[in-house]
Length: 380
Ligand code: SF4
Image (cartoon, rainbow, N blue to C red; front, side, top):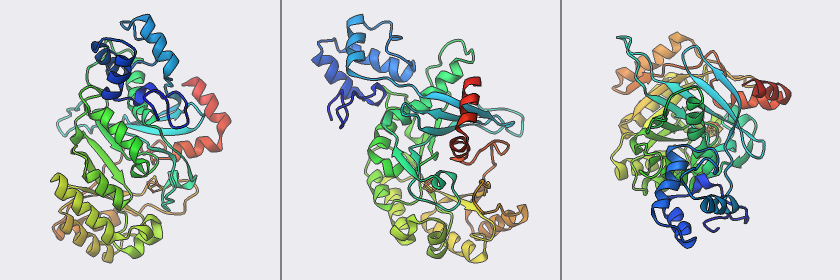
């Protein structure tokens, strides 16, 4: 791979370059060093959708960039809005594949105040190979990893969408000031592209989003958790646990057979030691599967060992998956039992329940009905 082409020799997409690479090829082409700042500014701060927009770059440089790189903005195929302000985006990639991102506004406070905090849930793969039994993304299998620019452009495309709605001038900070890698796919299975995308989100020359506002969520790839622990940035780590014993996890998350709980938890401890940061544990409550007292007992033991916070998420049923959401009473009982054992526990206030909120659902429906998606895409 060179600065301007990928391993297959195709031109690289511009929104996957970092500052060092930009500096190198601009110097090679004979341009002054301030052009690096200008180019990166167009890519990651002004969210340019084309090279032609980069009006303060000389024409010769724009021609060189067009000759050496591609720039392939995501195309909005469909948008769904929830009554609570959550917006779900279905993006079409250059090769026609579909991925999702979800923009989630902060909750309105008890005093009626609304913070301007927005979280964007970002995808890392087309489909997913890990086949968790409750998950819409896993249902359609794995197609491919996203390139770094396809991860980065989910954030930039939401900014362009926001600006197109008539905001007068681009804010220096992105609308989405919290990034969670919890969309379609297993982020740590696409490690190199994930790390490049996180670098672009976080760097001052990139989108300048604090590492503490970037969360990587994993279903439990223990070796990659240890690898992530070696990076200098303080990214937040969330574990999709969903079962507190090997017996339950084996049933609903095949990854557990490769990296059983003990291996996963000791990788989490290594991450905590390296970063000095609290880990979150996500636990989807599925009726009759992982809501029993033995799970409370085991989960409280793991939570105390990791000194972590547990987020309980009542299951959001998915068409084609025969699993159910537990009753509010079961959710409350599970939460209270953990609380009594001294675990910091919350039930996540669900957003977007009136749209296809569970990740992968919108793509799943759209792949089943391509004609409908096209029609909606034109309307959107
Ligand atoms: S929960 Fe995550 S790892 Fe499991 S199938 Fe879904 S996207 Fe893949």
